[in-house]
Image 1 (spheres, rainbow, N blue to C red):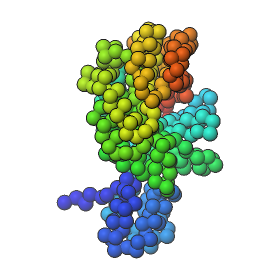
Image 2 (cartoon, protein in one colour; image 1 turned 90 degrees about the horizontal axis):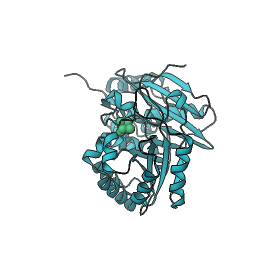
Image 3 (cartoon, helix red, strand yellow; image 1 turned 120 degrees about the horizontal axis):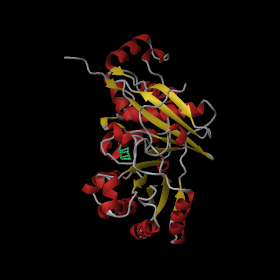
Image 4 (cartoon, rainbow, N blue to C red; image 1 turned 90 degrees about the vertical axis):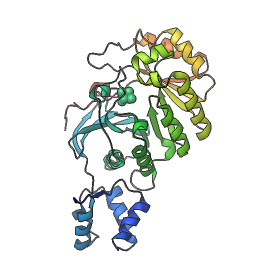
Length: 350
Ligand code: SF4
């Protein structure tokens, strides 16, 4: 039978300690391994120089170490957004996007290669779902960005699960990754600074609440009637708006945090004053804020980006109703790193 090696990078410290104990090694080796894996970011056992040659050979025989090959990196003209393209061990590709905003350094992380949910305004949808990412592959995106920033005297402060894929469709690996990202070594991002963005997988939201993780929840709403939402987001056929909002309410009650509703503004489709007024009615009894995102154009899509006047009109109606609403002007839409633009055919700009 083939020897199936265990991936070390997705293990919790206690699981790592168990593996160390199974090998008959001293307890302190766990701490050394954690340091190599999460702080120093080595990708082969040979580099673990405080372990004897014999131990390194044994580790190599039983375990593997994920290496994400960064095969592309491109910076927006404004220099506040950087997109990384990674090649996975099976040669598939994912992207993450690093955004700088004041003192905030946020990494937008992918959770799947492609996505099965077919939202009409989204470039990733065109790939379909190729596969789920492992926890190690998710964590490694974050560790890469953390190392990238630390080499420049900077620090990653926030993580959003908002890249390629619907994170709640890869629940176990995403939750494992979040817990690893939050540990006090490696990326060490505070739990309240991690946000998961969903398009409305209702059972997944309920399951997430039961995890009691206190991470932020962002919901990509984008429409205010079921007819309208189902046109651009097929998931709405399964879990319509009322069910979705009730799950979000329950999450907020459980976690005692505000939700964020993302609203991608599509000109002539959902950017009219009546859309804004229906949005107010839907969310006014909820502790939430609204992120209005003027649509970032992708090729051959039947939508238009709204003009500034339509954006201002929409947001003004929300704020006049005392809702907390902000416009998220795309960071990096010139490098296809804006919301809904992630797609594997990125230009490789070294
Ligand atoms: S918007 Fe999100 S959930 Fe919808 S297709 Fe794109 S990646 Fe998938």
